[in-house]
Image (cartoon, rainbow, N blue to C red):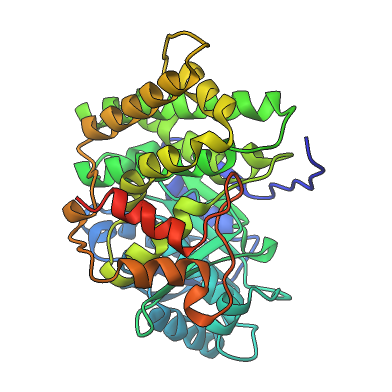
Length: 393
């Protein structure tokens, strides 16, 4: 186990009706807020009205900025930064899923940054401060409600970059599983794939003596695989959504990665798909993950055998670890198929035109400063291209 520094400051307020007292929760933290959200779904469901009523009853002044899209855009972040500065807000309340929360985080750190916030995403230089962010979660998937991560798309340059800072970890997040009841089937499936990928990126490691976090990762994966089909079968299954929502938070609040090297190659490869083709993040991850597994597993066969047995329930002879591994990956593919997730780039509307370009951009080879992806196995642009081609069609 490696040395680590773990801090989880986000207050999670879980359960029925919590969104109805959001004003009471935020009142000690702010007098004036930016209410940040996506399209019209929170208004159609009545969530918007309930939140407005709660905030106003607590005497909180509200400035609004809607319009967040999946793969949140830099242009709206720039608008939000200007609005927050002009209105001198004290806090940003993000009501939505990962895209809304990520947009709120980028705005929050941009308010105090002297320059274009995109420069921070490009350089990864630390920011000194940010506005506090609170969330009301409507889509369990990204884990952004308790992480210090944000991912933003520069739509003009067709680039999608991640940034991490403790300053943008939400101060509080409200999670009422009832708010997930109206999600369409594809959002449920994409969310499950995204949450599972957050675990995979931490689970597959070359670090040894990590029994506790191994077990936590495996339990989280089994929980996700057990409950995603239940939520699809019955959108109002409060128990299934409770398990999925909390598992999504645990998957990305940092706990599962403590004391172990991590990978993140699949996420980096997927960001290129989203940046150019605007595909759903979870869909891209579902396509990439099995191919990545098959490409890298020989670097640490025991780790993949452990996954196959402890997560996918594979039986077999330990004398044939390759067969056990392949069966584990095959069962994962079958699970994704059960959720009606895509398995090829062609299904995502991606042809071979930009594969080499995306491979080079993912590692930095396109700008002459290549930084290989991954922790389990270092992937250079040629490796990334090989993986893309494995799943072309």
